[in-house]
Length: 170
Image 1 (cartoon, rainbow, N blue to C red):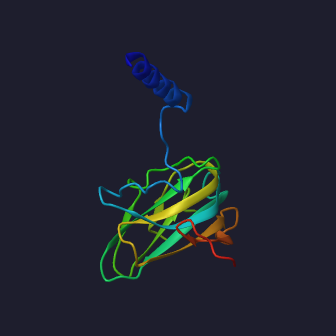
Image 2 (image 1 turned 90 degrees about the vertical axis):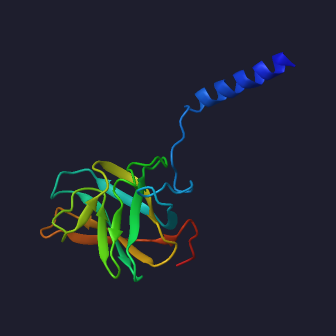
């Protein structure tokens, strides 16, 4: 009996070590808290890209979110690389959007976009993102790519924004 328990425990430890020993957030994982508040996965955005160029050059992905409620709502955007690994801390970059207000998030420098813009991280990415909020309803968002090589920077592509992880045909 003791041998079985030791064997099972050893097998579990070896299995964890082979898997890397750490868990990472993925787009379909339970959403993290935002500034200590429970959050909800509202939308997913495939096709997020950032060329990693220095401002004002390169391609960035922008997320514009509007609060349609009569109360402030905490909102965050979590970006994932092509392997599904989270690249930013959605809690640390989350912002309170006032009632009726709009806030913009970017994968890199704001490229001259009108403030306020919350920078999620700096670097190169080809992946996806999810929009999180401390409220289940009342936040609407769009996502688009911007070419910073143009002066002024210009939107180049609209990205699909789908409810959680369910996409309807377009």
